[in-house]
Image (cartoon, rainbow, N blue to C red; front, top):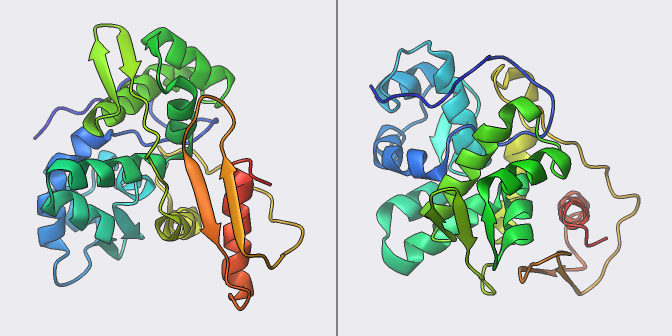
Length: 257
């Protein structure tokens, strides 16, 4: 069994939720995860024992499953867990395609995306990342070091930064795009089965629902700060109202409206 990185007091804490396992840790599990879910879904007990190589009832299995979901690599609840197309894309490709898909996974985690936008094309100390996480992203102070580790390791795995001791150099990525359809799936996955989320994961930040729905051709915006990441959304006037509401909610989450 692998050594778990989780340290300190366990249990639910306040503050912004983020994956407690990094992409660097999770990618080594994707082949096995895909193999287990190739023909049917699995339970959290089967996932913990068969993929995570830990006790079937280990609480760390639920935390690791939560991380997979937050990165858009898994869907479902504890009784029916399945892998996603993004999970398959990462596991079955290499080179530029794999890197692009890893970047897509990282951008599904809003606090990671916000931190990347802030520090993109700069070199900072890890302590500064921790300060930003607590002050700006509202991460619980007790989880500051966990955030630094999970964020930096994930960025490194996605070829978005280079680490030199306590210094981290973030690359400029003007072509890093957010796939809207995958973001919609992510919103749905993060809101389903909230009552069964594991006791170690932080609660989702709730965004206000948009006050009105409007029909238009295109929304185009850029996140404020040191970001070159664009979100381009084409809206069909005949789009289902529920889907349009999700699109508007996504825009509001990124400060576009």
